[in-house]
Length: 222
Image 1: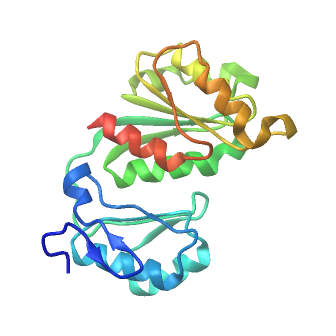
Image 2: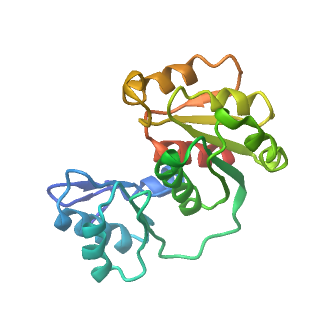
């Protein structure tokens, strides 16, 4: 029972059921480190309070377990993210284009895309258009110019975010990924490139944090 505290105390977790009213979207469940039982009980509490469910970094076996209790729960195996909304959404927000530099970056891009869709945004995807073949992004310039916000997901040296930002007027949210060879340092090289972008209007989230990029883009879009 939430009473007037704004949260439900489950003992192992204090579920913030006030967050949807406060931030515009319910508390999101980060799954690693939580038992299947914990995930189920937190999800049940959110649904009981008419909150959306968004579970990030959810393993397939845990989704299969939760699906038995929540038949309408949807799962994206690439992004390892699941979503369920107990109510019909209003008209969708403006267009966000999610771009990946390479095919290996797609799981992180998908995490951003699912988060955006769950939060009511229009989403278009543009994958495998990195700087090794600039003609690929240039042939889609019409689409990216229509976007309210762009999310650019890139590993290796992470140069794509600066390139895209220099072509458009919309804000760019850059997501460095851990894709790359040794000197990529698990995404650090892409992170530093994006942080040092000479193109104004680029914001950077943490390495492999597609969820954070999608959430932030949605806040801007509102």
